[in-house]
Length: 169
Image 1 (cartoon, one colour):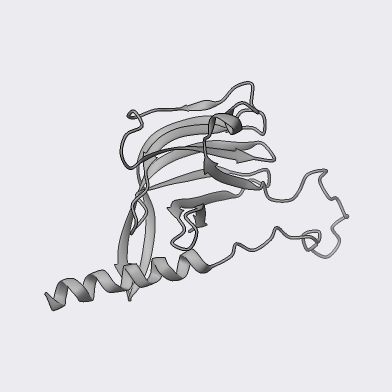
Image 2 (cartoon, one colour; image 1 turned 90 degrees about the vertical axis):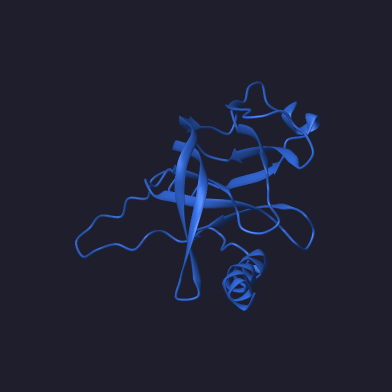
């Protein structure tokens, strides 16, 4: 019993702390330059703002089209979610998330990719149905933003107010 408690406690504490962390705002200054480099700031150089919410009929009505998949019908414990972005993101993947506890810290990684699409845009968000567990996240998203940076997030639910969270890893 003590071994089970010792193994279960660190991940639960890490998740509880992760739910309290506020994501950093996107940078507001231009990227650093190297010596002799000419200043060139792309028209849209900041990170994409990606958000998650419950996919209500009112919210879905704001979009002409959506993309995604429904692995199962909405039933007890299942939620329909929507992932929106303010800028186009590429190589979008919705996947299972696995984890490993190393040195009392949780290391997340992607398992099976359940759905992928070349891009998600502000006018065509991603919608799916999933079950969000109360403990360790089981699903996540990955994409390449406008800066060419690969971003990985778990999908979680706040223990404070029940809001949906994308937690970067």
